[in-house]
Amino acid sequence: MQNAGIAALGLNWRYLAFDVKPDDLRDAIRGAMTMKFIGLNLTVPHKLLALEMADELDPSAVQWGAVNTLRFEARDSQGQWRPLGHFAGDVPGPIRSKGFNTDADALIQALREELDWQLLAGAGVLVLGAGGAGRVAALRLASEAAGILFLVNRTVAKAEVLAAEIRKRFPGQEVTVGYPKNKVDLVINATSLGLQAGDDLALDPKQFSLRQTRALYDMIYRPAETPLLKAAKAAGCRTANGLGMLLHQGAKALEIWSERPAPLGVMRRALESEVYPP
Image 1 (cartoon, one colour):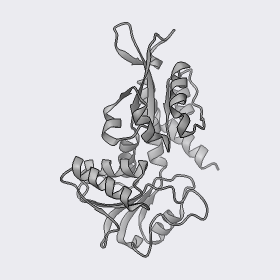
Image 2 (cartoon, rainbow, N blue to C red):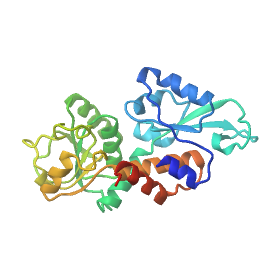
Image 3 (cartoon, rainbow, N blue to C red):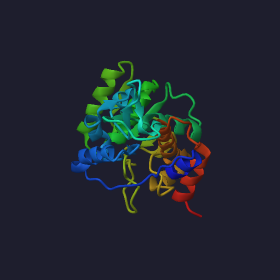
Image 4 (cartoon, helix red, strand yellow):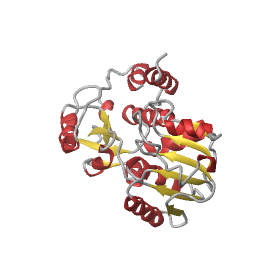
């Protein structure tokens, strides 16, 4: 997806994947900066750790409390910090890292495009998972003035901490830890359950029936249909997987690095071809 977008923009860049252990993340960021990488994407479990490691934070990272995109910057001839992609020749020192979050807005965009969710205000939403992805999702939904948020997590205490944060930051938002007793408009799976064959459902069907919701969004995109999505379809729900969220967070990251509009159609076709080959 990213390499297709980079090629379409005519940039002499290459997007590569690296396995980095959490204990080595700080060294990896510093090494990439030393080698004058344009930037980095970070996935679990690095998104929370990077908050403390970035030299500067964009308001998006501060607001949603996670970093999934780093951009490396240097000062131009006027002394302004600019992305390294801005410099045609040698990059002047020093270089700094700036952290962004592109996940939160990508989720809302995907919900609107794939589930026709134009108005989240007033909706009842059950969020499964209170880790990095679930936290960002719940906070972003609270900012949209969801009617009521229900938070379910394997470790209840973690959900309670998140609920307390939401109440503090969004005093008008109603939030409850545990399953709803009545119907909700949307269920979001922000857990990793469904990635592996044989995983349990991300929710407890004894405590919540999928017939209690109109729609379900699963952030997992591979496999294309998790057991939870399959069960939701059987219950008559409108469903979508996480491919759209992946696309939009990646496209925004490319725009952050390049300062140019991302070629969304090119990136979508490349992503679909890679994730769901014929």
